[in-house]
Each structure stands twice: as C-alpha cells, then as structure tokens.
Length: 113
Length: 115
Image: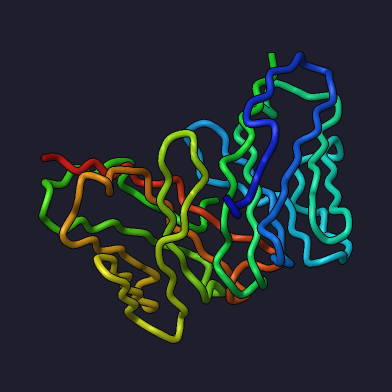
C-alpha cells in the first residue's frame, strides 16, 4: 500500500536502553509529524518537519528525545535512556501540505520494562 | 489543561439510528477542526474536517457542525452502521491544518453500534 509506514510495530526494551523508531511518509508528502498516545489519553503532538527545514523541538517531552528527517522523506525518532513513562504508542503522520489533513501510520507500540 | 474535550468516553447507538459525537474546545485561536476514526491496533483515519469560516460540512453519512460562539463541534453519523464502531477523536489546529503546532486532540469517544 501507499500509506504511512512505521517500524517496528512493537518494541519491548529495558529501562535505560536507547530506541529508534522509523517512519516512511506517503511519497510526495512534504509535512511529517510525530505524536504519542499514552494509555487512555489523546494523541500528544511531539514534532513537525516541513521538507528539509529544521524542526521546532519545543514539543519534545525531554532532551532524551530527538528526531531527524533525512532527504525530506524518512524520519527517525530516537529516545535515549528510556524510562517507564516513555511507554506509549508513537504515531507518525504525513500530509501533502501543512494545510491538508494528516494521514497516520499504525504506530509503534513501545513498552519499557 | 485540556484544550480539546470530548466529555463522553463512550456512546452506544442502535444500528440505523443517528450517532452524535460532541467536542468542546477552549482555545479561540483554533480555526480548523477534524474528526478521526480509530480501530484497535491501527492508526487514526481521517474522516471529515471543517474550517472556522463554515458552520457545516457534509460528506456522505458524516456531517460536522461547528458553533464558534459556543466553541463546540459535533459529528453526526446517519444512518449508523456496525462498521462505525470505533474510537472517534476530535482534533483542532490554529494555523489552518497543523503546521508547526501539530493537531491538538481530545481523548476520544468510543462509539458502539448495536445491532
């Protein structure tokens, strides 16, 4: 299919380890977003990329979180020294343009033991 | 503080009847609103949106109504079908679609369509 692809779909890791989550947006979509959904909560916006422009990182929960987008396409979200409160579903979305509806991937379910 | 509120965690509706899902917001800078539908273990799927310059938008069985003075929007589904059973999220943005601030989501309403 031509939807937003995220990998891995599930990740279980020990507290203190680093994890890297990947997002392949829909081809041609310039805008890319990361969100996370904790249990029983709505989606929380983390970071936005427009093409190759440097993102505004102020929405990231802590300095353990970082994200990059290479070549205006694939994006990775990295969490260093994971904590149990990082357990959540991490969702990536893309849109053709910031003023158009976002299309979501199925997410990565991250569990920190 | 929650800027987008969906006060009903769940709603049960009989098949064929109208489903009405409600959403309230507090940020007067929001100018674009969306509804997403989510099945378990899948990402949210875009349903319908409305700009603040309109008060109604219709797409097939789905209609979204916006009352700016009350800071309230609702999603009407008619007639309701079994496949409509899912969690529905209301979302809003202040720059006509998301952009640098992303979308602000409510916590969702679980719609259950009973046969």
